[in-house]
Length: 263
Image (cartoon, rainbow, N blue to C red):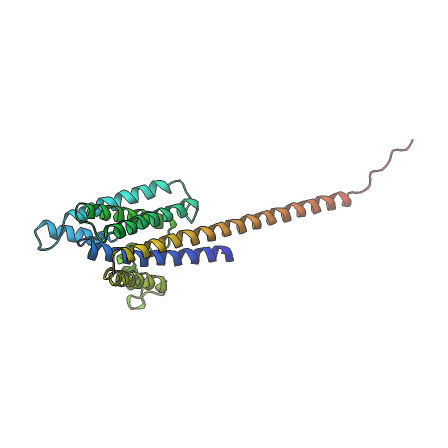
């Protein structure tokens, strides 16, 4: 693996971890600010929905159900957007994360204009867009295929962290990225809950800025890596052509002179 590829891989991992932090913020907004709804963690919504359907006191069922379908719809759109693209960061990846940032920015402005969370049913509209944006983000992150970092859940990450540990007989694992993903989604939830005490637009705006920043940094790095790869391939092609020409010239000079016929 060359230096450019390693740098691109490390940056992509860092950006996915940043988006994991952003998901923690968004889920804090959904659960604390939008009537106990998770926008990114669909496992939580399924559990809340199951308990609410049997009449558990204080638990909603409409919001979690809407979030589930909105998340899946966003994931479908994300999957179709990148279906024909090769794995890795490309222009569509950048535009996809830009779209997530745009959706979060719209919600930020909306909550600023309405003075906070609007009453139902408009509150459900915010839930719908928020969950759809997270589903879209999850599909794009899945396409990037960064191991152990989905940006929206950490259950499988925790399982890997424990099952591959030395206590379980494992010989080694990427524990830094796994522990980092778990810590960052928790830290995001903490930051989101703290900012909610001031205004719901603050955590939404921060999440939008993180998504937008990830889109820009990822795009610039991918563009730089592509230019470096093209320059390297052009240089290798030039060297191969010069080598072939040198060999051809050597073959010609090594041939014995042709005898002239006697007149």
